Length: 503
Image (cartoon, rainbow, N blue to C red):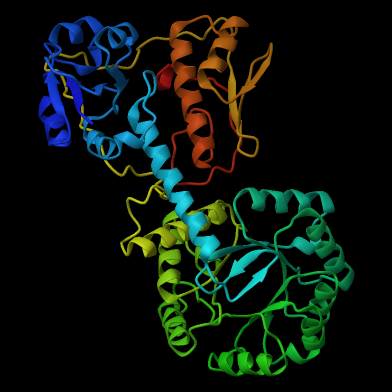
C-alpha cells in the first residue's frame, strides 16, 4: 500500500522519524499541522497515485470533496506524530475514519487482539480440574477468587448486591467469608443465596468443621482452609459431593502442607488446591515466596493458591502496583488462584486489577517477554509516554489572583459526589442538579439562572472538574479543599469563599 502522510513545518522532523520508510511525507506550507485544510492539501499534492493519504488526527476540516476529486482515500492519522509508527505497521488492518483519529482505532485493535488471544489461550488450556465451567490450574490462566468478608452476616439484598458487583469486576470464584459468630443456619442461607444468584463457583471460608460440612451440603463448590485439624470431620461430605478443597499447613509448621495434601489424596479427595500461605510484608513475605518456589519444584501439578489480599490489605500503598507485581510473581511461581478481598477502602478495585494482571501475564508468557506493550495495562495515574511540553512564549501575562470579589447575586452552590453511583451533586437553594458531565451540569445551572457571573462559572468549572476526577480515581472530594494524601473526616462544606481560591 502506497501512503502519503501530510504534516506541517513544525512537526516534520518527528513525522519523518516515525514514518521511516513506510510512507511518503508531504510537508505543507503551514506551521501547525492541525490547521491543514482541503485547499492547502489540494494545491500541494504531488504527482503519482497513492492508496491512502493521512492527515493529522487533530484536523477538523472535511476532506470528502477532495477525496472524490483525487480518487484517493483521505483519513485521519493519529493525533500525535510518534503514533504513526504503530499505525503504519498495521494500517491495512485498521478501519480508518474521516472523523476519528487513527490512534483510537489502534488502541482498540490492540486491546481486541489481546483479549482474543487470552480467550483462545483459555479455550485451549488443559486444567487440573474445572469448577462450574471455570478451568483451574494446569495451563489455564490464573483465576481470581474474590472474598466477600462477613458474608454470613449480610442481609440477602446486600449479599446479592455484593456478588453481582464482584461478578462485574471479573471475579472467577465468589468466596463467602464467615463471621466469627456464624451459625450453621447462616452458612446454609448464604450459600443458597449465592448459588441462586451466580453461576460462578462459590466457596466458603471458615476453619469450623461443622460450618464447612453445612456449606458443602448446601452446594458450595469449594472450601478453604483444610488441614489435619478439621479434614477428618469433613472428609465424607467432601468426597460425596466431589467438592474442591484448599489445603493449608498446620499452624506453625509449613512442612505439614505436603503431608496434609497426601492425606487428602488418600481419603479420595481429587480436587485439591495447595496454599503454602503468603505472608504480609514485614512478617516474612520473602520466605513465604520461597516456600511457593520450593513447593512448585516438588509438585508441578497441584494448583497453587496465592493469597494476594494478605499483602494488599496490610500495606498503605496503592493496590494497583502491588497487585500487578504480586500477580507477576505468582505467575513465575506457577500459581493458579489469586485470592483477594476488597475489605478496606484502599483495596477497592483489587478484583479488577488482578483480573487484568492475570491477563497480562498470559500474554507476556505467550510472547516470552516482560508484561509491557501488550494492548492491556494497569497504568492508572502515570502515562506510558509523555507528550512534548508546550513552548512558553517569551511574552505572556502571568496570571494573578483577583484582589476584590463579590458573591454571585444568583447564590452559592454546594458540590458533592456519590462515588457509588458515579454522580456529581450540585445543590442550590432553588434546585439540585445531578450528573456525570461537567459541561452539562454548568449549562443546566446557567439555564436555571443559578449562575450570573463569569468568574463564578469559571470557579465552578474548576471544582466540577475536580469532583469528576475524584469519582474517576475513587478519591475523596471536599469542595475548595486541595487533593491531599490525607483522609477527610468532615463532610463537604458549602461554597463560601470561591473568589479567594481562583473564582
